[in-house]
Amino acid sequence: MSSMLKKAAVVSIPTVRQALIRSNPVLANALLAKRSYNSKGGVEMTVRDALNSALEEEMIADEKVYLLGEEVGQYNGAYKVSKGLLDKFGPKRVIDTPITESGFCGLAVGSAFAGLKPVCEFMTWNFAMQAIDQIVNSAAKTHYMSGGNVDCPITFRGPNGAASGVAAQHSQCFAAWYGSVPGLKVVSPWNSEDAKGLLKAAIRDPNPVVVLENELMYGISFPMSEAALSKDFVVEIGKAKIEKEGSDITIVAHSRSVGFALEAAELLEKQGVCKAEVINLRSIRPLDIDTIIKSVKKTNRLVTVEGGWPQYGVGSEICAQIMESEAFDHLDAPVVRVTGADIPTPYAANLESFAFPDTEVIARVVQRTLNKKIGA
Image 1 (cartoon, one colour):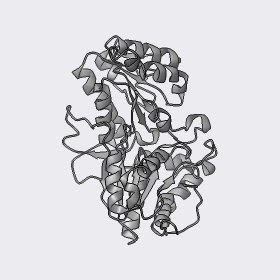
Image 2 (cartoon, one colour):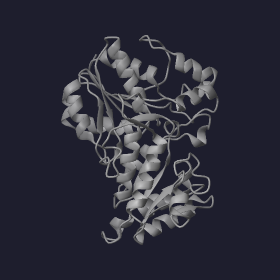
Image 3 (cartoon, one colour):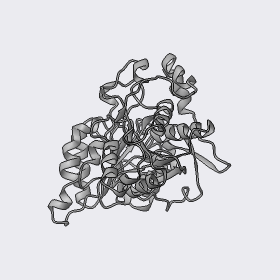
């Protein structure tokens, strides 16, 4: 069942952030952009800089790699992800395109068929709907339809899901859309290590890879391990990461929702409610169902979290695969989905804040799930 985002209090949750979002969304988003996940010493890097580093390292390592998209060159990218790359690599490898997603995406796919390794940036994945035929029918299917003779080593990337104040046509999550397509790999990074490692893995992969970033995460800093700073660092596509170990319930999330899930888990543990295990999916297709199954067999309960719509979503697929696996016999309560509301995203800030799951909602749903039993 999908948890609709009603704000009835079940556990005591600080609501200062939500109050700020509703009363002053501009200030709230400015503070969010400056947020940092503290590390014990070491180097911190924003998600934006991690993506930029990945692009630069792969373009240095392989002259077949090039970047194209709207405003990626002279403007340094709409979100400054490609800052400085035009100066370093020149206009033959950092190409500003016209506003024609179908056109430049088709050019990129064709160049991949010819042996290049394009990184095709969409200013937002919402605009990629103009090019969905190129992505699904050309990039995803040609290797199969050519009997394995034609590879398509292309990376599609850009911001996915809801941002802030951009209304219904610019706030969709495409994880379930592209995650359903055979021939595509789909990744969804949360932090800076995810962003760098998954983008580098995508560029090196001989298959078409969809990289679903999040606009609200670009300016957030995360600690980077020594390994992640290396030019050889990659994150394996198809492998989830346990961000927090626990024993009482499993929370599975991807992209921005991972941060909310961790906050909810830490809050509930501090209150003595439970010890939740938090899994960062990282990869939507292939889905690391084995890691989820192993966790569920330990905790006996499962909550999935995503910003997309409830029907036919990532959480729905996880529920189905858990039901079909040996983990089903270990469940003490029904699997619960926490999703975005089943509506077009509102433009009004006060309504928009209710349309997507946050720390408060996840914590409330986890506690409710802990109090349920199958058949009760």
